Image 1 (cartoon, one colour):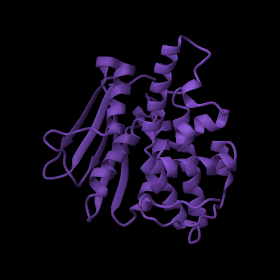
Image 2: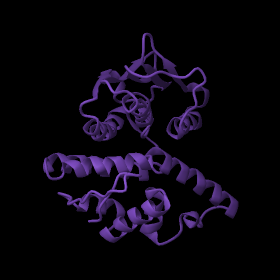
Image 3: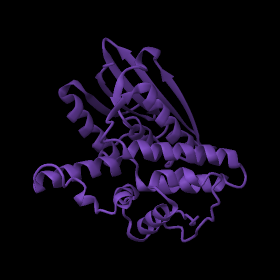
Length: 268
């Protein structure tokens, strides 16, 4: 298996995967997997875009040829690729692989579990256009995979707990909609603070409305916040699926910390 190095580190970490076939299952075969990472590292291309091309041998821009006009196909393809690639940021993928690599020799069973969860995230991301929604319970299962990898990476600097209303678990939510909120908390809370950051994921169903929150004890929200790709894409997805029935917010807490949230109809 090819070695994976942290972006910009100039060093590679040799990896011997406990279950090498997990990611190969996602990419089709080892050759496609290794080629994907080689191209990504050399050109900065999204791995998921390469996955779509490598699985069929057809450039991503040509996958929708069988339907609609050329202009419609291009617009549809652009929207689909934007949705796919923006849900799982490339820096997260590389950091996740390096986190797994660091546990290969010392805790192979732990590395195996993390790798399996990463593969599940990749599959869910690649399946977004066919399955744009899932139950909150299923979404939390995907979130657990992302959280496990990130908490392994920042083991001494973060605590994470969930406060989930049982009545909310059957509600439908956009697939991978909570992950951008948690990623934002890691990027602007955990990564920027040397001390411990406490993270809380909440879900409450009240008056036929579902509210999802991710609270961080460190960091704050600027007076004029600029949303990253993940949060901006989430807002667009909420608007497309629910229109004015959904809302999104990002706010500072007193005396410190921040809260990211969204609300939508509780549909089962």
